[in-house]
Image 1 (cartoon, rainbow over the protein chains, first blue to last red):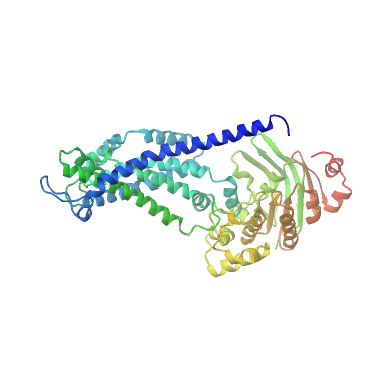
Image 2 (cartoon, rainbow over the protein chains, first blue to last red):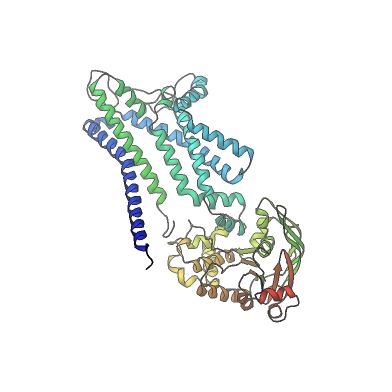
Length: 288
Length: 252
């Protein structure tokens, strides 16, 4: 054995352990706030949860009881609208950037715009939807809220879709073209399909992000203390309801706000898991 | 049945790089033809010109003519039609990773709008039998992904996928260079069986492989075809000094 070999081995072992320790520590640092927030939410919100919370609409100040049924349904409607607008636009844009517009000035402009849009404060998105939908219509509406959230989803989905498509190996595209498959068909049925787990993750991220947004809804969906699923009328949403209740001076409303926050998070986790489960069924053995 | 390929005055470029220069060559039907030569000599570019894959690269350009049977592929047909008549197997096995074994084989037909289930079933079975993979995969055709197979099996899957579209010509670009010796010999046996039904063009770095599977061999050097003759003649008594230098291992 050469001299110094043993020393070097010991140094490498030490470096190995240190790197592992740093990685574990970072993980803990990242996970801790999440666990703490979730734990505190359960602690504050769980006691206010009862059947009425899920079945009743809010009651006037002074009366006890009431729930957020209208806000839960309202959030679902708004997020449904937002996804209908944001997912196809975002994925379509991403496909254009990665497959058809590669290297063109148009693609560069779109990519730049998407990146800027990603950084625009959400209240500005609300203002945009206000002037695009609310002003021409003359009233607040669920549609306006859906448009605001939908526009917010587009840049995230667009850019993740592009990134994921670019990660599909060139060999896979060549295999499809080599079989005499037209390019558009190869893009849709092979490239997009191969990248779909990543694209779905991108959509879920965008969905979860807008699900908790309050600002863009303030002057679009407005909020509603009553039961409404009419797309042309103001609609309640969990984040809005939480916002109103949390700022109120009443303890009863504070408790409901905590419960609302808990329900919002649980619903987001549930929705994301559901999509993951549905899209992972039928995945074959050995698929990476 | 396979058809012959007539190549005349074929030139190809990547950007300003003149990768193929004045290639003239007649590839016989229902035989295996090997193309040998050092890396970068233009063999791969040449086979990619036969199914018009060359032009999928935006900076690529081609002149000259290639006739497959009675079809002038640069005049009379669209690239997608050519590629259905000329199957291709690539250097690295490239099964579609999200598809089952069955769907991989059926892909060429399904993606071109073919949907008769019973016929698809029988085509998939026939193609997998033709590529000597059927016995190894018949029990998990729809359960396992193409990517779960071993490298050698994946390459035979890719051959089955190419055969399923019923091509007349099969291009193989170093089909065994990423495989171990056992898988390689399986692929070679396969080429031997397939050449009665298809015209096979195989690019290879392995001269023994060329000698084993091909009746005709072409030697490429620096974008030109130096010599094209029967495999026996190329390896025992080449007419060109450069061919002799290459096969005796003096360069390349």
